[in-house]
Image (cartoon, rainbow over all chains, first blue to last red; front, side, top):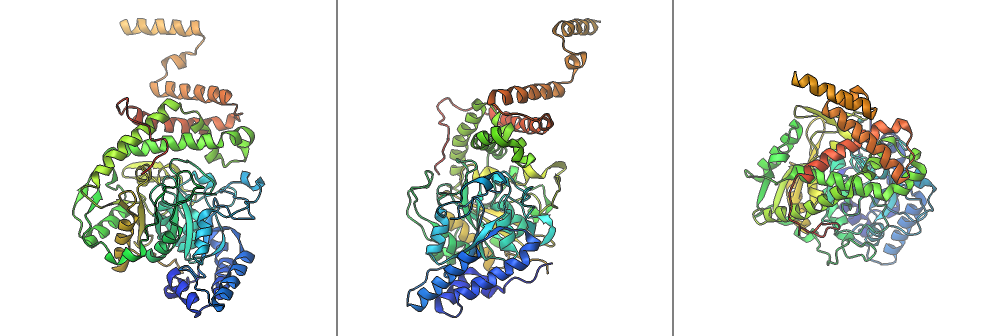
Length: 466
Length: 90
């Protein structure tokens, strides 16, 4: 089993940054300790596919030198972070969880979000395991092995940002980046019991990341504390012409707003389709609702159909992205991913366009709900982390496949790009997360609620099993 | 009696078209299965994807799953003038 993670007062990104900026800790000490932790614990967790040791040490020395020279360091000074291996890292091939991409040329420039975190003082320490080409909710990977859940090594991390979940929950790094097309930040946040932010579609730049479904792809941070999530989020905001979907909006920093908490916000629990058929998810929602004094339920109309439309668009757009590779080297894919992608290539375009039309209708209907509420609570996953290799789980009285259905509650939300903070509830023996859903561009509202819940102890990232 | 005569005539059609008796009298589920299998084979050829025969079952399973989701979308009537949200701006 794992050693204890760094104590929270040191392990939290904000505290580390403050200590490094003031000179109480050197960035080099922080990074060396992080690299030692990765060497020791990653043998169990399989979270990393590459550790950028030399780069991290050089960067840490540079930060310490700058501080000694009188330069004021940024809000993430010396904070180690790692990224899902679909983010470009200069000098490395961007694997996106695949064997095929190993043959690609190394990236010549970092992804925009890595650059922005480093401008804020962060130190990149490596690339993280993920489900092949992000078409995954499990965190399993046939080429690199499954990332393992720090709360029970026999269990899934959830995916596709499985390495990100394992690295943060296991205390290897205080901060990681993931991507979320249909739930790939929120599902591992739930299975691993950490905080995750899937921002509004178009809020954070995806430039120089390997895509999956262009019209659904989001990127965002994962952390053990809401303040750390916000530090990273604020550092990464802002328009980027290198991502065609990135909105031309000014950054809207959330850190100054966090203390407002949930006061005055109108909150409802999602009913109907979201009325969980899983005992743990139900328990988690109830705890949050009680803590927030919420007794209102709200139906999200046609959510099941929205999930189906997202499923359809994903299958088709994902297949289109991979069509040439499927013709040339289908045998090199994970069979489970290959079969889904080839099937997606065969779906008639007339049906896919209907899904895009439905998306317009659904978006307009959901935006009407936000005239009456500021926040909607919904389960993130229908169950706690399944066992690695588990094929099905019970959903109410039905037995359904794990791979396609762990995101049954996340898909209808990302389908229209709404911002969501995934908030872990430390149930025993395993945590599970709740989605805090806000109106477009109101990440501040979702994060304020998440912060209030963490502050009163209802939500927290539990320490991994010792 | 009438039912029996219908069966006979179907059976006769099957002989003419060269289809097996099983295909003709297969339950609806099995017919859908055959249709999807045929679609997998034809689409792969049209798209230029070489299929290992061992993959067909998995691809067929996934295509049927996607088409079940597509049906739910397809059943929802929308006005002609609804604009598809191909790239979505929140």
